[in-house]
Image (cartoon, rainbow, N blue to C red):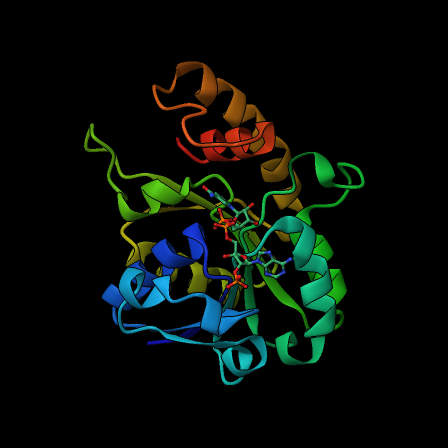
Length: 215
Ligand SMILES: NC(=O)c1ccc[n+]([C@@H]2O[C@H](COP(=O)([O-])OP(=O)(O)OC[C@H]3O[C@@H](n4cnc5c(N)ncnc54)[C@H](OP(=O)(O)O)[C@@H]3O)[C@@H](O)[C@H]2O)c1
């Protein structure tokens, strides 16, 4: 069983953490303001809540469940702690990538520098469906993941299966570029058909993000 540090205390963080704790992993949350996240005690009972540095200390796996715009800076700032640790980048950049020749996860790896072990995953999994790995038709939902290390891909595959999802190996980390580009496309098609599309977002970005992962 792994010690999983989830950075961020939002929607994805909560549902991933709850699922992994249920599977027997130890989950700790890293927050900018741990005292400002009392919702976690109720949302993810049993998980420890602490500052970023403490959460990273001793983690086997780090999940960056923070906004895309904050990921690169976080990775650079904590590069020493993140080197040689498996980092799962779940962030969706939408229109904010410099171009389509690099993925968000590759930017994260570059910010960590030599020794980075980054896997892109959960990009197109809507936060609410993280708690429902099997859809209403009885179909197990996919989790796409991409990374360069065979061993890290094996670990992520196991973590995906621990949540009850179907892992889809998308190959090397550079293939995360396709995921980053596809998420807005999935978003549009899902938005066109999903009953709940746009149901919660307060901005077009929120609506696209939520619909994107709603598959
Ligand atoms: N929502 C989805 O369905 C979905 C699907 C796939 C992927 N994603 C990706 O998953 C990530 C998290 O999404 P979410 O929907 O869970 O977001 P969220 O509910 O807004 O939570 C994000 C968390 O990140 C932390 N945070 C916010 N701003 C930050 C900053 N500037 N620096 C460091 N930490 C910051 C906050 O935790 P603290 O205040 O405790 O620090 C916050 O609770 C995003 O990158 C998103 O693109 C989301």
